[in-house]
Length: 162
Image 1: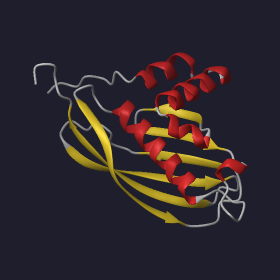
Image 2: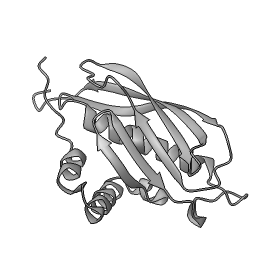
Image 3: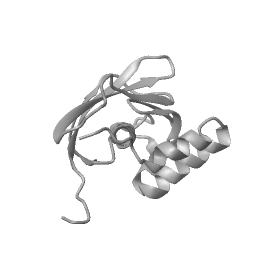
Image 4: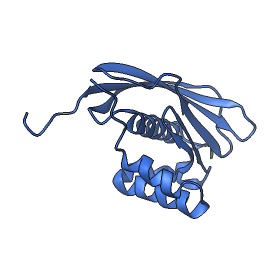
């Protein structure tokens, strides 16, 4: 099977608009329009390229827990978003994906805005398999507050003939 680059709309939009603040805002809004649940964390995309995603989320009342810190599930949401975008823009057009598991570690209380990073060295997946994508979440003091390993199942995309 020859390599066929991703046809991800997200990647196309980022390449067109990602160099401008208003463009990054637009791409983030488009993402949250496509998957409305991710709008709950109001992500701000920083880096979008195959194998590397970074985004931020503000500490605000809508993501608070009872301690007025960032809720653990809001961080899970951000982690799944970053891993999903990474795999979506990194896969060739012959494959599709779905998350099938997540293991998380809550390392510190998240008291500030957060930076979410999903980065992998080798992202040329060319067969059906499960891959584990690591996601780290940092506070504004560069302390790691959360880690997730998200398992994504990659399967061949069905063709019109099937």
